[in-house]
Length: 507
Image (cartoon, rainbow, N blue to C red):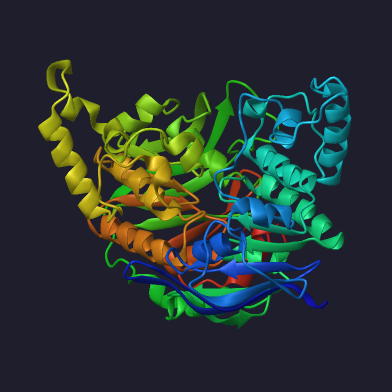
């Protein structure tokens, strides 16, 4: 490892009566990906604010290339080659890619007009260096979230960044988009860029990190090896064992809620890359949490969306029963009448209306109850929302707060509250803890077990095997749109992997 280009020593920061940072030491070398882990409130954001010039420390010192620095504004840090890409990307959707890349430092001709052709050529080169094959004339509003993330990195390259801070860069990305981002980040590392990578997704650590630092309660708990087991990282993050995150499993189960026997989904329109369920057999009982395991493309997400009729119109062939009775699923309305609720894996894109308040998002699924005779009832809405905020411990407990301003964990709690207020019998969950910290995950696990204990059935897809093993009563393995095996709690990760890879065939 080369000598550090960035060194922070004994950094302290207080906001009123809150000690945000307690003597933090942190270093970053050129050509290094330094992953920073910590729950919400651990001090990560405050530390990054100091590095990027948005805040100044009360005590401690910071040096860049061995020389002391004390940035007074983000512009000072930017001029020194430090660029932070926040979780909420600072791109202008109504402008094209090239205009975004040069926003604030547009190139001009000799007669002070916009040098559009030159900006386009240089934009092509910046995108190429970031591993992006996009036309710089495209509007940012037309791009997928993963593409926008890469454009933001290209914008950092335009500023000649030597240090790049990425805050939860994959929180809103699909697995494919995240993999592409990893490749771009590795290329930047090879060119000597020092990268601080903040994430809640522990499964990313061994795939991207050169070094790992864990923060808790405003201080550094210690460093961990990039290939450290998730259980070790969780212990450092929350101060307790990984297995303690999961509540006790259910006792006796009730009647079957969902029963699929050799069920196949026939979509009205074929979609490239969409794995339609081909041969699915599974049962979910009252009070039971059933997990769906499998590699990307196995058909887990497609099974959930096809059951709910979400972005997947078509018809089911085979036996499909709800509550012991045959049902014809194929639309969201049909699924909701059958007692289903669905939490998508993209809470920001399809699970929430980010510009609306917490209250408005929560009552979306119960509009008939809060709008008797077609007129909104403020008292009924307030009662529904207050009960939901208390039940799901949404923080801050302020109904008027815009959802976009909440943390990832609290946004996910709002999604749960919205869906569960309708009183479903079966809850379909796709990656329910994606992009939330360990503490929020533990709260979600407790809520799910409480719901199951009250008789709700849960069918959950997750790419995190430790999550499925700790949470679920049974785990169904899918491969190529087919359910290939079913296991009770206690199965090993290795067994699940082997069936997921197709190395072991169902008996």
